[in-house]
Structure formats: C-alpha cells, structure tokens
Length: 175
Image 1 (spheres, rainbow, N blue to C red):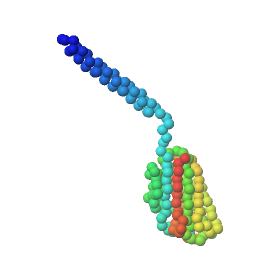
Image 2: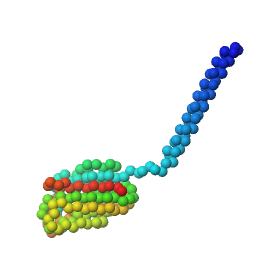
Image 3: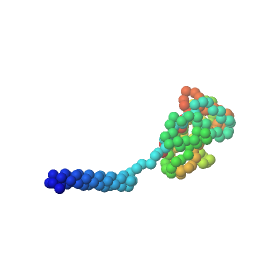
Image 4: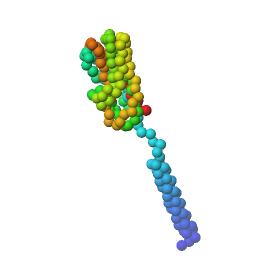
C-alpha cells in the first residue's frame, strides 16, 4: 500500500470519527435539552374564558325562578359552557369571576337575579325600582365538575328579559 493510499484511508477514517463524535455530541445536547424541558414546572394550565348572551326576548312567569336561556357564545376558549343546558361546568378547582348583565323588558317592582351552584342559590341580587338593566358580579371558589347556572325571578308578576337596547350576557373568567 502506497503512502497516498494510507493517507486517503486515514482521512476517510478521521471524517467518520469526526461525524460520529459530532452526532454523539448532538444527541447528548438533545437529551439534556429534552430533560430540561420535561422537568420544567413553570407550565401554566389552561384557564376558562367564556362570554355567552341571550339574543332574543325570553318570557319569565310570575314568582317562578326561570333559568336564563343563553343562546350564543361570543367565545368559549375551552368549551366549558353547555349552551344546551345553559350551564357552566367548572373544569378545575379554583376561583372564578362571574358577571351577569340582564336587560329587563318589563316594568317590574322586584326582580331577583340568582347564581346557582349545583342547584343551590350561591348569591342573589334583588332590584326594586324599575331598573332597565340588572347585574350580578361574584368571585367564588368552585370544585371541578360543579354546575353554575343563572336564574331570573319576577316577584308578583310575569316579565320578559333580553331584547331592548342592552344585551343580556354572562362572562366567566377563571382567576
């Protein structure tokens, strides 16, 4: 074997060794990065963000608590609101902020807006001076899977909600 043949064979072997060394280094770096990414605890969980509204007039019988029939979702980032049953199902344990705005289409002496959690009244706002719009805002700690609904109650007469110049809407934000 000539000197040139040995140099050529040596060069080819060096190239193979260098490629193997680089690829091994790359795998080691890749594994280190993967471990760092997988052990990071700064990953934030998804948070609910919902806005639904009533886009027609809803009849409310006298002295009968009536579920507000939400008809349309402007946004429901993680599909936590069930429009068919007019309820929000909590995806996680935690604090949630609710803001419900109801347009009253009937002159009424007393109107209640109620927030129910699993069929129990959590909070109630009572209005009694012929308000056009009533609101209820509440921050509450809820457990995963609890159902939240909003109810309207006219005291002593039937009425309507929705319609009019103001929108009837509900916003929900997980804090």
